[in-house]
Length: 308
Image (cartoon, rainbow, N blue to C red; front, side, top):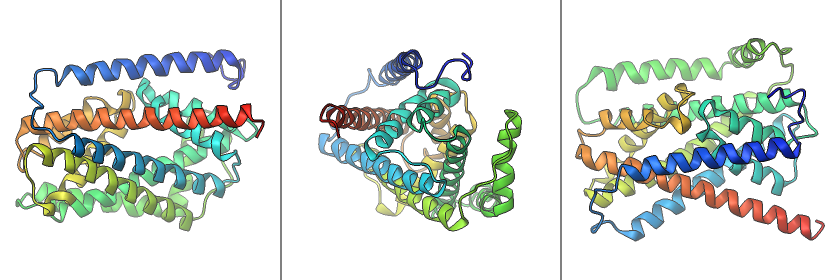
């Protein structure tokens, strides 16, 4: 489908996107549920699951707030209700291989704005998310109780180099414009200020801490863990997320994050508990995304019906 032939805001594109997202989400949920059917959950606390769900939802809401900060720095304007619907719906687009669903849904939300600026905002958001993940991983490695040069020395050193490089204004501009050149588009002239990048990154660190705490609570439901392990769990979760981002054609990083966590966490908790906890975290994240997308869509419909 050529985007310059069929309008991104046409009803046909909307229907196609909806169907693709629906199919991708259903397949993802089926695969996740298939991995836990034989496990005994009699000792699992529903209160812990609810607390994890709330933390995950708060993390996504916090991320949306800082997305509006980022788009504001680029001069992108959209009503809050429409922006929230686009943001939370686009999260579900991640389950389409290649992340194309996320990109197209965001583009549709800012129909009166330059698609190039929207694309730049998305790239910058990914950069901020990677910076936040790098910081969380570096903090986590400082608490690793085992002597492993790869985890405690080389990994944080490598991530620190990436961190400092991405914070350099000229490197950030080159990264963004490289993507535009790959897709044969004119380079971008407008970029957010470094203080904006740092603000968004700090916001995404808070999201990471909330999601890391949710994952810690799930693990803790099966095997009591010392609170001192929370930074390690959070760092491992976001190291797996970084690898999942690199595996762009894996829907939602499916299989990639799980594999990384299966390698990293068995030294503090049983490997079977890691597998079950990762699947539950995935299902709760998907449930939160569906809930927030549904609520934001409902608010948009109510406002539209009321003529607001």
